[in-house]
Length: 470
Image (cartoon, rainbow, N blue to C red; front, side, top):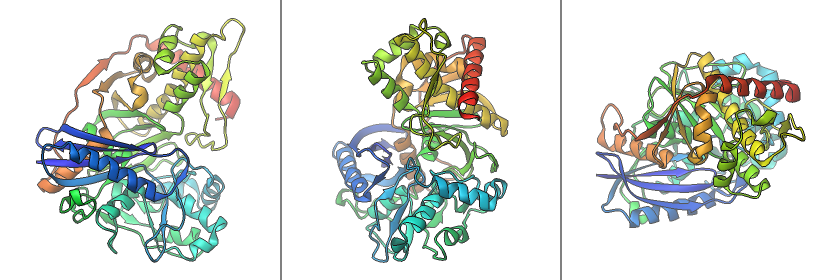
């Protein structure tokens, strides 16, 4: 049996056809997305069709089921004719930061964390709805329903029926869903939309069927899974369990783990999401990850391979240079308007090697703080699984264990978000109690100098506090 998993991320759509018994990827497809923080959802659909058709054309057999994983938090607003009212606002659009602050001031961080599992920041869908009401009220008058990116793509695959659905994992990233009860909180939507309550998707269980695919014709008749958010799909694809923390280094940086119990953390550092299996997914997210390395490599006139070589030629601590890499603002800590800072510069240490090392250390220190926040909230941390584009860097792999303070495993290269979506599809069509057990091969990187790692972490904390007061 073959199943299809689709990953609609910020940068591209990836599709993988997987042999369901062993979890072997047999074909793939990919189509890019334009950059930016808002986008016409039709672009996602065209990319989805292109990536899907590429994968299906190379598949050795017909696909029996399909699921979609998508970037979290994005706001897809539809009118009564089921057409988008405007371009979708993405998770990395920070224009709703004032509305996020107003929500926290009005309700209190503890109250919101207990009700929704999160303390709103500009990333979350709820704050984007508040921005819409304040800045484009004429659109709110026509607003009929709100979908997340993966909901919208699943709905398109199903042929745009009247009925829409989502899953509890992606729903928990909206800011108007209760992870504890598993129900929407429409009163929060009504509040920010000045009395208007949009229709929200039905929340399906993790292995519940969402109908059958209608489009494209090559997928017609395939069982449609409920889909989920990208981080939830990555956790499912990696098959993580207690003691595992995933650190994903893509456009954003995330650190997350599975938990049997919901987490409500009032500082907003840890988001108390649900996962894609019926459990919970406490998660810390930073806005600045792989692009920190991209930007530094460009500044130094090299590529990512050259940046890695430069970084490994410098000592731990980068000769005293510390980069706090808030190049695109920051979500954790909540500093949406912040810019990056390079501290400790002297005539003796301002070298390409030290700057490259500071970029790698700064990116990883932000995620190491995230791992520590998970630990503080009761998550057991025995090992870190390092994934995402930046995890392919030899410098990142070498430096990460000392900064995280635990062994780091790097899974074999793969599209783990798309693989998680495929695993969900296989689970749905098999009607078993648990998802398939597909386990990736990993290369282990041990801690080599925990003391040096601790010194780098301390220097980073000092720089962050001195510049940003947090």
